[in-house]
Image 1 (cartoon, rainbow, N blue to C red):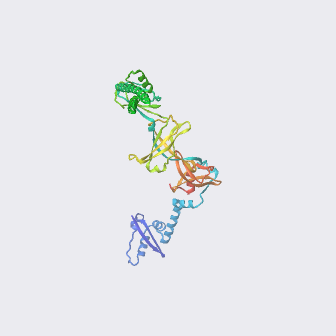
Image 2: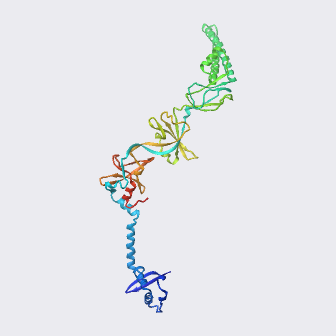
Amino acid sequence: MKKLIKYKAHGTRYKGFACTSELEPEHFSRRPSSESAPNHRLYQYLLSCRIRFAYRFRRVFVRPKKRYAQFILRRLVFALCLAPSPLFFSVSALAADNSIAIAADHLKNLGIVLGKPEPVTQIPLLTAPAKVVVPPSEDYLVSASQSGLITRLHASIGETVKKGQVLAELNSPDLLTLQREYLKAESALQLGSLVFRRDKKLFEEGVIPERRWQETASQYHAFMSEASEHRQLLEIAGMTDAEIEQLKNTHRLSGQLQVRSPIAGTVMERMAVAGSRVDVLAPLYRIADLSELWLEISVPQERAAEVKIGDSVELENVESQDGAAMAKIGLLSQNVNPENQTVLARAVIKGKQPAIRPGQRINIRIIRTAEKPAYRVPNTAIAQHEGHAYLFIRSATGFNVAPVDVIGKQGESSIVGGNLAGTEDIAVKGAVALKATWLGLGSDE
């Protein structure tokens, strides 16, 4: 239990706390006195205490008001000197010259390693996921032009095929009907051609009237149109010109239909089995030309404004003969995907890249040509302070602190811009120690 002790002697007031255990109860002699002299009563109370307590009380706990204020002020100033606030040092550091004086033999002790900034022409903007797709103009679905029974399939998935190569064979009764109608139209055309030549000669000699000649010519043109129609139906069914000419000359019908590849490419998918019966336009194969591929990039909608048409795209972990595989953005979508809040950006991959395949998901980096001088430095060379970035440039007496702008990041390095020439020696390691020296005893982080 503590007791508040007030004491006045020789014109000086004393006040403090003391523990009652330091007093011996048998010496507590509270002598009655008048209220007009409280100090005398307190003085008698103190005299009844032990000498050691009275000495401790007067020297430690009891302080004059004026001297006590001076004592507290001195302690406060001393404490601020020992534990300075970052605010005081940051203000003083920025107000002073941005230079650090360090002897050359101390660099190794501080773990400082020097290096030079690397000039760059490309600035990385952002990293995003992308999917490799085949352009719609190079992706074909091969289907059965006539209903029938699949007798044989010649191509398998992943196989490279040429244009016009036979992929499948079908037995189609409908093909026989088309061939018969074509031969019938060809016979009518041949007969109409004979009548046309005869009436033309008679009209020129004045034997037949002009009206009859017109009727003959009109009928002949109708035969030509009908024959051409049936020939085109056979071509649509999958017969080649050579096969049609053979049919015209031999008049031999055949229900064997051959399904051919419309382009040169790679078989991406097979959707039929030999021995099955298919209907008209039933899908059999999917073939794609992989000489040109696209990237569908999902750009976060809050950063879509940073991407421009013509920006370059670097594919991560994909190497080509000329280095990293590259692409160029050719389209930016105007709508946002409601499911993931991303904007579609389409890029065309340059050249044929064997390591890139349709359906592959990869990470890409969108980069842009730097309009101003830019340099690549390690992330460990950059010191952050109060929202600004700084580099430590070697000088004759130590280091100069140079502000820079971080305009991009790429792995363990950053792209910065500022008042740099590219020939300076900068601290690529040990920036933390230099920052602490620059700011005083610590940093604001």
